[in-house]
Length: 308
Image 1 (cartoon, rainbow, N blue to C red):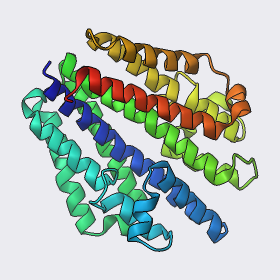
Image 2: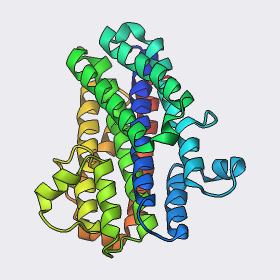
Image 3: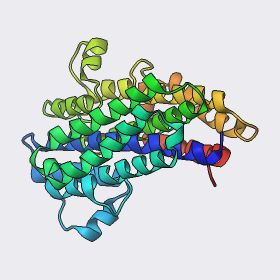
Image 4: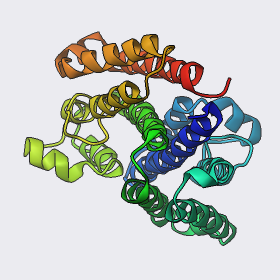
């Protein structure tokens, strides 16, 4: 496959997944902000989210205080940075348009329609009137794109690069979301924090899964265990890296051995990790190291397969 085509497919999938995960992160903070809490606690949650996405300075340069509506508008419709939902869906559509011939018609129409509809929804003020409804819509459109992708695409290299972008972005964003919430709550087990962690699980479509697996009260340690090392949780770090390792084995070339080793080592460490050991070294530091190593895998993929 031409590196140019692989590049567009990979980034189309990453931007679609990033839009979904930005919506998930915003939804967690929005739901938490509805709970009774001191103003400084709510502000800390929004600040942690901006820190996790490396947007604190840019936000501060354009806005004053950390107000909920301003942060949501910044993360939904601000065109000046590539992580806003609007920017992500525009980039996904532009990458899809560049390789229109490599996509099935249903997949192209799904991506294109999502872009047209999100522009109209933002123009109509839907994210301000109904934030939760808008975030659910973004998640649904991402789910729809993946379903159409799996249901209509030939399982060739093009499909592999779509999936590779999806799972690498998912690993990155799940880790960022966890890091945001541990920074905001300190990992405490106070009664009111159970609602915070339930919101995290709901945002990752994991609340029902948590109840099936643990059948007990929600605790930060068990949430982390489910989202980091549980292999059957679709959005967990270990499940995402399992997919990345498998796809890299399918598309390997003469340059990709080091990237495969990096990804394989990270997956093996997750596969055999114990959550108690992760908390013993410090969850924030551990997640930061994971994010750094995922970024290294991404850089390896770009150097091995994609356009320079």
